Length: 191
Image 1 (tube, rainbow, N blue to C red):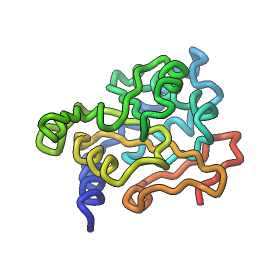
Image 2: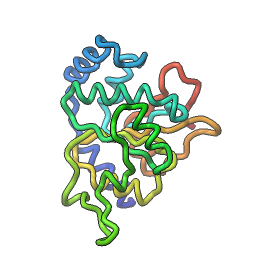
Image 3: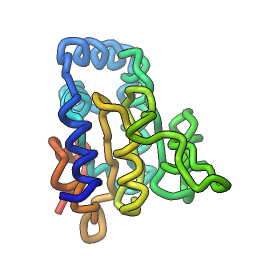
Image 4: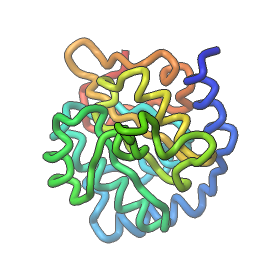
């Protein structure tokens, strides 16, 4: 088993679900009209899994779901980190989501002078929901470092395009994902 897979399994083991709390938060956000057409059941299933893959379509199509995830995260009073797999598109996603977006490297505090990350398995990020946009472009090194830096009990949501031949995710993510979803009202499918 690779180190990457081992870190993903560590995250999944530390995950606990309070389904009633998630359902209540999603219902409050839906009542305020902020789920952007995303069914409550879909949102509750997504937040009830430690590692998820969502075929959400190309970036503009996925923005309403990203915004809904942020709103439900607020309602749950949890940290939400939104990262792009690469620099391209993070500024546009930030504007659309109304939330700061960085890369995996920025989230984990990459220090180029010292050649190391500030966050890793010995000093993890706070427990959070981490949404990775454009995850089908995530490099193996960035994926492994994200899994190392995430605190046990965090949830990782990998948003993939799913169009044009299907998403190509890193094998460790595919194997560890406890939930694979297709964005409602989408013709995109995971391979």
